[in-house]
Length: 332
Image (cartoon, rainbow, N blue to C red; front, side):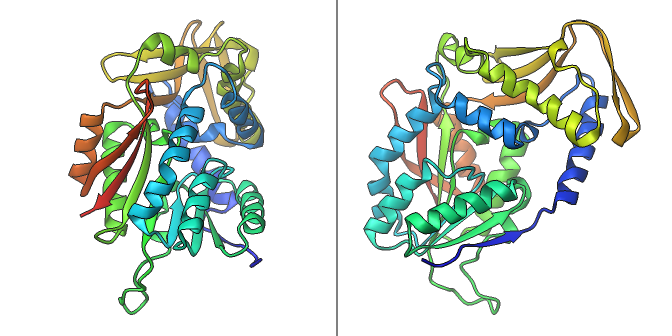
């Protein structure tokens, strides 16, 4: 077994500065908002793993089954020698791809990317043990700003290395970006891929709101705790004094934009102090702050977005209920 390597392109100091910047802008906005990436401290990651096991939360198990069915076909179609995964987390579902690509005989290196250095180091070590023939090369960074740090197909002299890459972006995370951000992000992926390399994309599909909304507002209240955890992160890292019990979890389906919005609603009026920002924030009773969007897609629409970025996407796997899709897109 080769020891995994981890490159750090996002130091704790940079991470805290990014949090300060996001909090300063989002809490001063009208309406207020916070980016969903700040859910994921150690406790938030634990809560999300718990969410994925809830009966109401179908996306993870649906995507896992699609990967189980499609992974051998993906391996055959791509002959990928390098698998890059953006927002890898525990790399749990990715093992299905790693199994298929190593069995196919092409995969040489796995490049997981995540914002959490501790989580990435732990996952990288475990994967290096499970796949001893595989070089594991982790990258600690923000996935929206990391693409230029990915291993390239060309050497420093511009020559081709010959290693075919596939970038995987799973879990429906693309839906956390608004359309303008998605356009920029997909175009930036296309810029770093060579012609004939692939993007494997997992996206949630538009389906019955009576199924979608409970997936983000479970009966056990796990998602509510996950949502309020972003306030705990601000308390911990910025010295804020949010009273978590004063904020109610809200999940709504926005029919116009075709996305789920998660919000936190102040039960009572409150003044919150953030000493690290030298800032105080007023919340009115009943005021809502957006913490996440989770856009759902129609196949025609996401196909057009991919085409606009420079991909063809004629290989698609969907579940029998058409709630989730895996799309293998080729850079053209």
